[in-house]
Length: 432
Image (cartoon, rainbow, N blue to C red; front, side, top):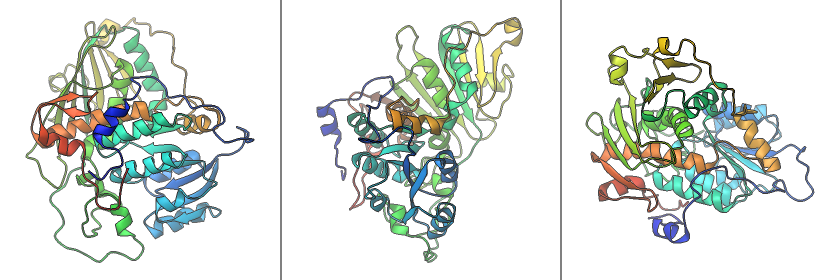
């Protein structure tokens, strides 16, 4: 495999810490610099989701901008005229005054850009999912663990919201008793047909080879860039990869999850090019400390692809939801709502006093960590484990097998085919 780290080398050199914050060391801005100074930030990816990430950090110094699309790059440069501009993120990382990098590219270039930034000694904020493959997630997490002075944050912004904190407090305080089952559903649909048959010329403002990065060579088509790339396996992972880190984050946080034991998935017939319109993924997790084993089920697609409890009318029919099923009751939540069920049972319920401190903001957590060494809530140790779990759902779907996952060995024990999706080849010239 064309990666700097092989799976065997990784296992020989040790594994990541199993839980908790990765704390940056003091002096993260360098000798003689004050935490009151503004951070010098380089931005890789400047349009669409990247606009939100730039807005989250632009109160610092934006000193470098990178995009493979000259039109997007020019628009960003108008807003940040003092920033140097690049088409290749590798050139941006050579800019000496860049302290930290925000990466908002398509999924298939997350890992190569993030790994290069960490190796260059830059703090990194990377959009979710952290990587395109399970192997990449583990390698990036390992690089972050080796460079503990560097602050990392995966972009699951809702993690910083008030509602998620109150849900976690309810679960962890025992409001619904031990939780043995969770259901998570999402209405979004990132799916498509086959590969486009026509091959229009590449526009002059798009550097197509750089957009492809480590992915296999294919002709340019506007179906891929700028917005629909999530539908193709070579570039994204469909709805599960897009939204799984947001919704499964709540379950991971509340129930101290790390890695599943088994994963199985059902969906429409597998298309070798594009992601499915609907999917059901069943994850099994072992007991953790005083928490029992957990069965976690993900659903996306049309309204009929939903948990039986929802279809039977036993819980409100929310468009998206996370349902914790406890021994004493149920808790339903989404980004901004939560309710205990059955409602009559909890009519006089008094929630616990808040014990999770409110966030200063997802981007601000990372900026503060870059300057002071304070912790971030979605560092690459946490984000890497969450990403691995999300992406294993797609691996199970594409193989058609119930997978037995050995997280310590980074291996599917019962499927050689699955390993070809856990770790994919890069085209020549690209490495982690």
